[in-house]
Length: 337
Image (cartoon, rainbow, N blue to C red; front, side, top):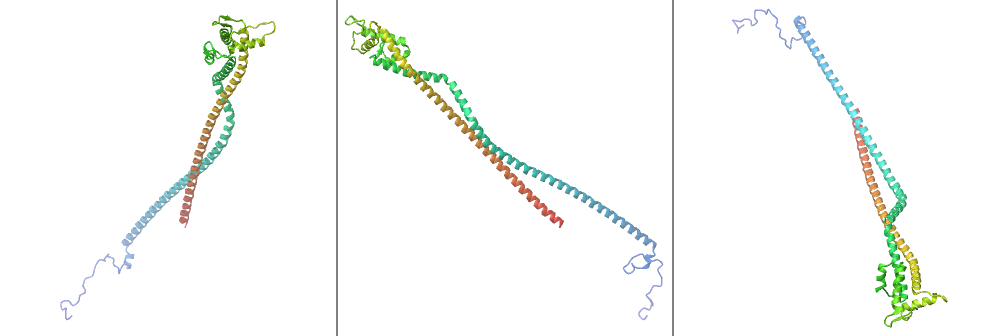
């Protein structure tokens, strides 16, 4: 009072006619809000809206969870389906490689076994057929070679017999030159040539103008002496044989012996030529069979390489599949934990 003379009291003399709506931390629990209808309405609206929003949020959350779950299930089904397909494909590839390897292995063995057996069975018949065909194709050449060999031997023997008679030339030619154009079998031509030479030397000697029907003008000459002796040997008592007849018989005997040796020589030459052809065909056949064996060997080697590759692929695929299955089992175990 001493210090405030004009204001004996600081308390205002008027009272408030309205109630404040402001909330404070001191009066939030005041009972005035519980009895206020407006506040109750606001609270009810707030709670209703909050509940509605919470329900909507929960529904959206549930819907999203359901969608995620469905998507996850779809993804899982896709993964399972893909995994099954990959597993089936891997198993099919593995089985295919294994079966292919086994099949090719059996094929390689069959080729090696049956190929060799077939070649051994085929070889004799094929060789006989090849030799027969070659002999037929060369029949003319073989016959010509045989005849040539017989001709050579026959000429040589006839020439040797004529030389024994003291004849070294016929018709002014050496015996080899004479028989180049005349066959040793031509008895008539040989007889005519020998008789002509015998007549010129042994029957008539123009230098002495001497003619002898006995052919002994120049008996010291070989042909004359030989024919005279043969006449004496084959003539019978009281029967005369002409010089020409003796010479003809002598030539026939020469040719007859020569033909025997010539035939033997021809057969030998024919056999030699046939043997040469057979040996040549055998060599060709051996070369062909060797090439076939080489081809079979290379084929078997190629098949074995393919089999090895198939087995390696099978082992690699099997290892990768088992490794993948092991990782999947570990992943599943972790998920279950």
